[in-house]
Image 1 (cartoon, one colour):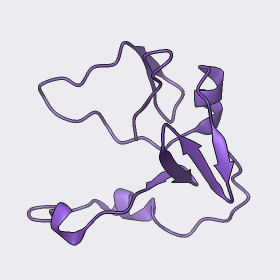
Image 2 (cartoon, one colour; image 1 turned 90 degrees about the vertical axis):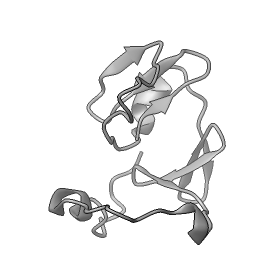
Image 3 (cartoon, helix red, strand yellow; image 1 turned 180 degrees about the horizontal axis):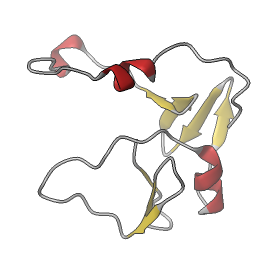
Image 4 (cartoon, helix red, strand yellow; image 1 turned 120 degrees about the horizontal axis):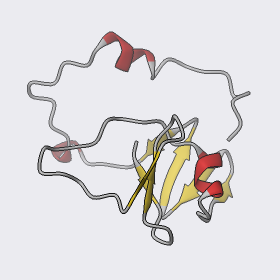
Length: 99
């Protein structure tokens, strides 16, 4: 997931790379990245805790993944074929990866 901060205008990726004044290009979505709370804190982003969730800009994250409630009608799977690498990202991970 790409995470931008309203206060700094920067996007943060899982490998720590930041992009100033992030804008989506006409080519589509940016590459997928895992949410990293430490990088957001480093950029001055305001994070809150709610149980085992991290709250940032009204979004809920756990273990680097965004948790969002969607209706089934809002999800399109036509033509989607996830790679093995993408599927492995959703394997259960131990909770020792504190963010």
